[in-house]
Amino acid sequence: PSYITHDQRLLRLRGGDRESTFAMLKPDVASDTHTVDEIKQRIAEAGLSIERERVCRLSRRRCGKFYAEHRTRPFYPALLGFMSSGPVVMLELSGESAIGAWRSLIGPTSTETARKEAPRSLRAMYGSDNTRNAAHGSDSPASAAREIRLMFQKPAWRRLEVYAGLAAAFLLTKRE
Ligand code: AMP
Image (cartoon, rainbow, N blue to C red; front, side, top):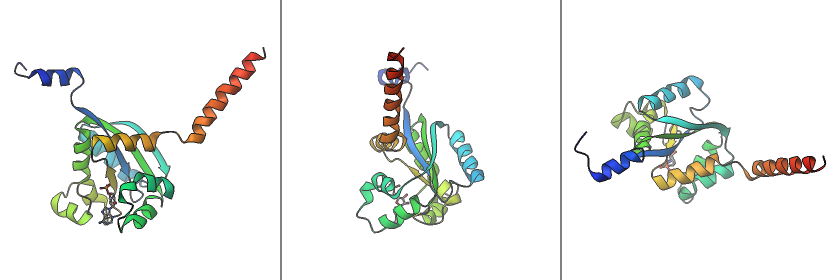
């Protein structure tokens, strides 16, 4: 293409407007392998790649940290109860405009609205209400960075374990 601006050329050299986002499949869908596979298929069709994946059950405390901005909302206790009720699938997705692409794939927060306005969206297809709404997606580059850091970082005791392993290896080799 000959008519691209200087800024566009720079953007392409840097790999296009590739973004990362944090996606989470919530406990209402995460245990159903068939649904998880269908969702992964939709992710691929949207041109997004899965960079990291982690399946785990979140403690209430961790959910509280994750949803700290909603602390004063009336639905907060129900949200924490639900999010810590079973395993979740956490994904780091990357691709062109990944934040917006994933959010449009999941659809509006309310399942009812999703069914009316975006019937092919994941929340329309798999959600049941405002709380049990199948999936989460970061809303900005800043929250994507924060959520990826918060959910993929090794817990402190796991990092300690690595240091302890290194220290043990060092002590053992010194003895030779
Ligand atoms: P968000 O950070 O926008 O993803 O919102 C966090 C989550 O809070 C949503 O995905 C819902 O699970 C829940 N939530 C938001 N609004 C409501 C509401 N009005 N009633 C119950 N749960 C809600």
